[in-house]
Length: 319
Image 1 (spheres, rainbow, N blue to C red):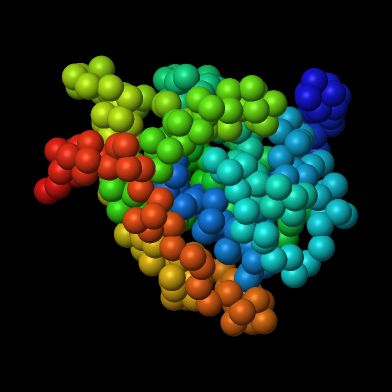
Image 2: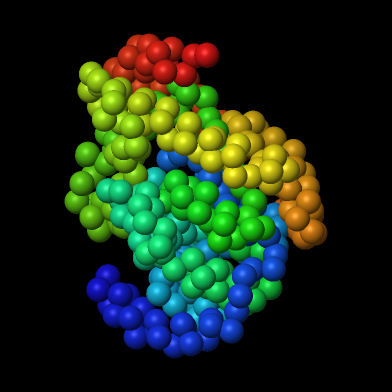
């Protein structure tokens, strides 16, 4: 892994020199937003399977200090017409063509960490440089750039200022299954601690505690998760309501998107059309991918915790 960081440090200065000539992205920038375990990876995999959208692949994900050069290398390696394997584990995908969350990139450019994902001092963030990087990637790909990362999601209000043409696909999920999935993720992370450290520290954001968490009295790790989901959901929705025009936000129910992905795609096409971009759809893949197995399935509910999960959902999510 250290070799990757060495390569990036060697390429960083050259990438900076090349991207200084770019300004802001001219095409829409697409953020796939939502809290962990809400279906963000799935929807990104579907979009890349049926359209010509630009995205951050596992190839480019290695070039976090040299994203423009990474885009050029990616362009030589990836082929058109790729259909995702639709496999992922805690947001981590397998295969060079698959989408990457690009945590290293966002930590560097937003000056944040897994422990504190909030931009505390915007003056210390190089938003001009970040815009140049995205404009350069857009130029290399020749398409709008789509990304998905929880650190970016938490700071969408700043990214909207950086990318005026930013649009958001906001993933939501039934609270019972959302909380159940969080608990399942916590348990999997505990059981696989050694694997976590070798596999990009998967599940790191499962334990993230948003601002305001300290104001609640929690009975344990299940309620910790419920409080975090509540607070982070409220943060995201407040940002979307105050910083974005309604026409710039596509709100998506995870299970509906899985059962009727073509209906979702029609709405996504209109989202980009509102920003002046006509997305090209690969008709063969679009017609083939008609539905996916539901994840909001009672068989996935954890017998040991389901009573507590339902109680906490009534406590924190019932209006």
